[in-house]
Image 1 (spheres, rainbow, N blue to C red):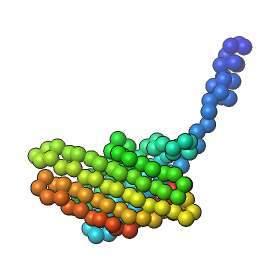
Image 2: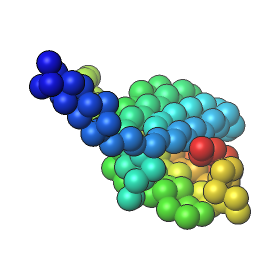
Image 3: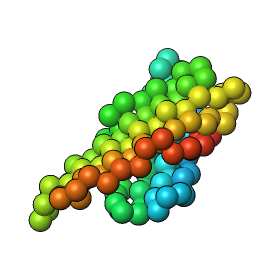
Image 4: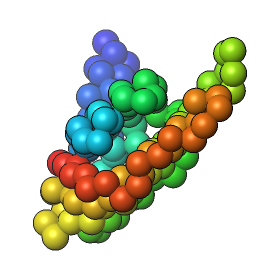
Length: 135
């Protein structure tokens, strides 16, 4: 009985609590539609716990956490680079880059860059205004 109570006490009181926060960006301009959602830890470096993104327009691409090449969420900066390659009838790739800053560390404004190679030509959108939110 004592062993069972000790085990229960260790499980209930011995585990660490981990705070998390979220981020999201929505963009609808210039023929592109991009939605990014994710969860980050509130520990050192704000590591990404989960993330997904959907791009529509000249390119229709779904991204997940494994497609985030670089990520930065420190102080007043939020940056991310997503990249995905696809093979099929032809080789294709898509790269999305976010560079934002914030005066209040809640609403971030900055620039978005999208590049997509469709197998024959690179389509790009550069320096588009984007807003993201973090909590």
